[in-house]
Image 1 (tube, rainbow, N blue to C red):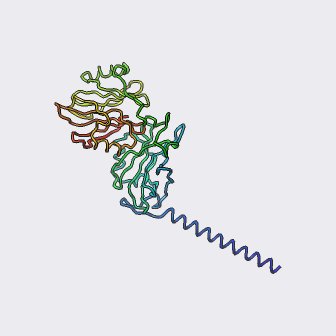
Image 2: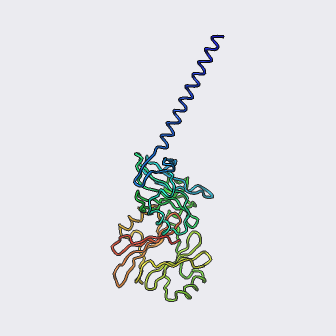
Image 3: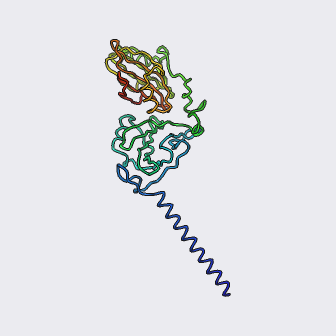
Length: 313
């Protein structure tokens, strides 16, 4: 009987010690994973805590679920860094106005702070949907826009970024979106005749959602967008007082422009590029690109400096 009670005491002590170790380990892990951080814009994370988001290959972050595969943004931070989910009110002041101006009507899907291996804030990532398409954008620690993050499907996370028949297969450079002016729907031609009879239609493109983009000229260069049924959407003047535009190949673009595009819009696909000319003088360049199935117009001045960039469709 005495021996039995002795064994019971030993077992109970072991249980108490094991439970205590488990509690201490849980507390240690909790404090390690939710360490308070202070950055240039205040304390980061909900409730002043870090809630790190698990990243996949190429520092990828899932942004949307597609019918065939989940879509990821890649290179969200440097190797060994951390992406931390945060409330939108913890983003630097310039971020939301930038989104409102450049992606009107966007829907916010997630906001994240980007920290290096020393847990110092390096910048921010914001994921939105625009025209029902996911967009990932990177900002620096002050909230200044840096670049549009490349997107990939899961099977391409470790590859070249696309596969034949995939969501981003236009990256092979063989998919043409140009459309002959004569092939434009009659309703679009009629719209120009009625509303902008002085316009000269220069180039036309069809987007993946079957909507249209028409470049026209009349005391300036204009981008005109239409729905897939030919209904007018918007008209934007991209450069004033220029009537002459000359096509330029991607290789023919000045080196500084090529560098800017590849840095700001990784894995972009060039639709077309033009030299804007007035009286024999180069006034600038207009470049239309497709980045993750969203079309952007990027404008440079005559010295090849970035002048403006905006979403076309």
